[in-house]
Length: 177
Image 1 (cartoon, rainbow, N blue to C red):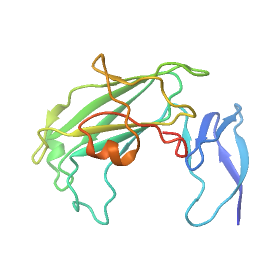
Image 2 (cartoon, rainbow, N blue to C red):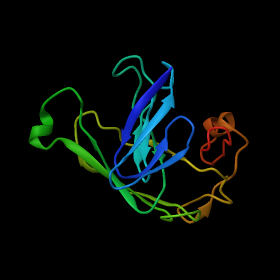
Image 3 (cartoon, rainbow, N blue to C red):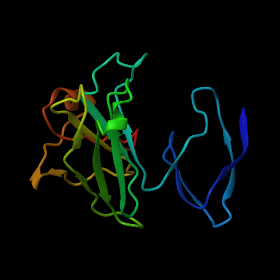
Image 4 (cartoon, rainbow, N blue to C red):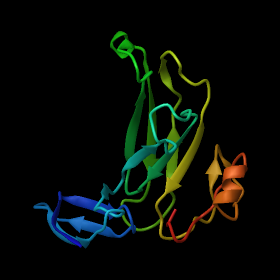
């Protein structure tokens, strides 16, 4: 079917499912989109940083030892990841942590994208001592190179190689990441 009159506020937006960019003027923009139950209309603001944990059927099914940040680079943006034990009210006594994630990217067109993940600030019961980070960067073209801490990371063939490697990167042209 069709979903009509989807209102987007002013600014740049990206269709989550196909990566199409949409610009809305100061008064916003109305869109019509073909939808089904698997692809309800979801739009992400350009410049957004979205934390993604592993897929789970219920809370606590898997450890949160890996977080992937979905990045929609456009200009400079930042995000604060807030965490606590998720079960108690100890956050009221300050038992929580925050972590800053910053992205620097061209405001228009293509160019280098820099990501900075700061150290975790604060503590709470059950907090992991270390965690693996993944970055999924929405891009229509593959990067020429990827660096971490000033050194080049190896380019890997696909998601399977990436998931089994200690570090590296790959580009999925179909997913644009």
